[in-house]
Amino acid sequence: MADDETPPGDAPATQPALAARKRPMEREHRRTVLRVILVTHLVLALLTGVGVSVAYQQLNGNIETLPGIPDGVDRPDAIEVEGPKQPINILIMGSDTRDCEGCAIDGEAGSEGSDTTILLHISADRKDAYGVSLPRDALVTRPDCMLPDGEEVPGEELAMFNEAFTLGGALCTTQMFEALTDVRVDHQVVVDFNGFKDMVDAVNGVEVCLPKDVDDPEHNIFFDAGTQTLTGQQALNYVRERSVLSVTGDIGRMTRQQAFIASMINKVVSAGTLSRPDRVFSFLDAATSSLKLDKELANLPALVDLAMQFKNTGLDDIRFITVPFAEYEPDPNRLVWTEDADKLWERIRNDRRLGRDFSEESIKADDPVGTASGSPSTALPSDGSSATPEETAAAQEAAAARLAAGLCA
Image (cartoon, rainbow, N blue to C red):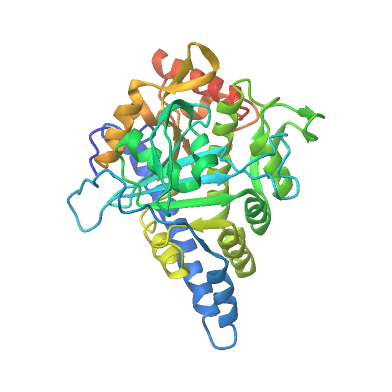
C-alpha cells in the first residue's frame, strides 16, 4: 500500500525517542487483534468437535444470503495492485425496519430503509482498514438498478442516498455506490438493529463518553454525562439519538455511530471478552444472527478467513471517517458530496493510505471514547515538546467537532 502521506499520530523520523516509545504500543495493538482471531479459531475448533458440532451448525445456519448482482450490470473493474493479495472493499448497510422491540425510538417507523452505510476498505498489505460513512441525506444521482428477476428500478436525479435501500435493498445500494464512486464492491453486508443490541450485550456492554446529560422525553432517552458502559437497548438509544447530543443532527449521529463501532471493536479484542469463551460464542451467535451477506461470505469458514485478514492490523490502524460533504444550498436539510470525495474514492481505488487531509479528524479503534473534560490535549505532541500554533488550532478544532457530534473531546 502506498504510504506517500503519513497519517497523524505516526512518529516522524526526526523523533526517534517518541518512535521507540510507540513501537511496543503498536505491537500490543497488533497482538490484541491477533488474539481475538486465534481465540475465535479456538472456539470454532471446539464447536466442531464431537458432541458439540450442533453449535457450529447453529452459527452457520444463522447467516442469511443476499442476492448477487446480476451479470448484466455494468460494474467498475477492480484495480490490481502489486503483491500476493488484493485490497478488499465491503459495503456495510444497517437495516432500520424498526420491527424489533425498542428499535423505533426515533419515530421513523415505516418501510425498510438504511440509516447507516459504511464502505470498509482493507488494504492489500492488511496493515490498514478504514470505514467511510455515507450520509443518508446526501443527494445523489441514483442510477437504474437491476433486480435478480430482471426487473429494473428507475433511477432519479437528486435522490436521497438511502432511498436506494428502500427501493431495492442492498442490491440497489451497491449498484448505486459503484456508479457514483467507480469503486468495485467485493462484499455486501446488511446488519439489523435487533442483532446490534444482542452483540452489545454479548460483550457485556460498550464504553462511551457523553459530554452532557441527555433529557429527551419525546423519545424516552435519558443519559447522564460522562464515561459509561451501555448495554443493548441503551446502546441502540445512543446511536439513534439525534435531538439533544449533536447540534449537527444526523451528521453528529453518524460520527457517534463511528465512535461506537470503534469502541465495540476495542471491547471485542479486550481481555474481558477473550478470556470468556462464552462471551466469544455469544458475540458470534448474535453477529451471525444479525447479518445478511453476499454468497461468497455467507458461511462461517469464509467469515473466519475474512477475520484472519486482520491479523497484521492493529487497533490504531482501524479508522473511521466521513465522505467529504457540504450543505445543498437550496435545502440546508440535505447534503451533497464535494469534489474532495472524488479524491477520496481515487485513493481507495488505488489502495493508497488516507493521508493527512482525510485522516486528521478520523476516529481510531484504539481510543474512540475521548475524555469528559473536553480537553484536546491528547491531540497535541506527546513527546514533551511545545505545540505549534497550527497544531494547537487543529487540536481545538477537532475537539470542537467531537463536542458538536455529541462526543467527548
